[in-house]
Image (cartoon, rainbow, N blue to C red; front, side, top):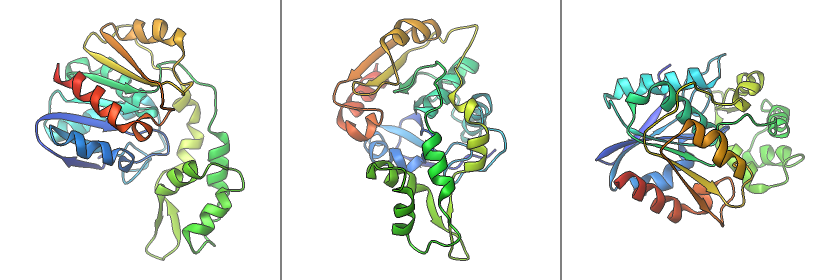
Length: 255
């Protein structure tokens, strides 16, 4: 599983992992700023972006993919940051391969299991007839029947591309994601906690991390943890409060 990635900058290595239905492009703006001080690697996780597709989609496999990439890049101990699904991949990596990273940053996700809440998005994406649409605006119109928020539609449509025969396709492996959705929602568990420096960044307007998570699964699995809340941000913390995320990440990595 050779993951697609984009490298920029020089200095301490930092891997950034996107969330469900995302691509490495979601973090490009913030990565360019971080690349002024760090060697940043933006990564497309399996079944997303330009990385290979697979029938298997779970956190063990995705963490192993990241380890394979780290080995390929010959960077024994990078810092790793992940958002949402990517945060769970980063947590799994840290718990399984604790000697193969320096620090961990998790953005707006807890290690717990979540109830299914992407069914509407998956159904909307599956309902688009990519064989007949001729423009991005037609795709948007079909998605708008069920997804009212324009920002969500624009985010999803970053996965849209034209094939060689000029028809449209989704870069993500929608079928595999749908079949393995229970694995995406599953908890991250370990018998042994991660004992290196860890930063959790929570969006104050997001419901993904509850107060009970902070003193439950998070502190149980990550013993040297700092938790920072950005009050004005929702789940898309890095898009809604990029300056604050940059400041928190830079400060954490520098100490």
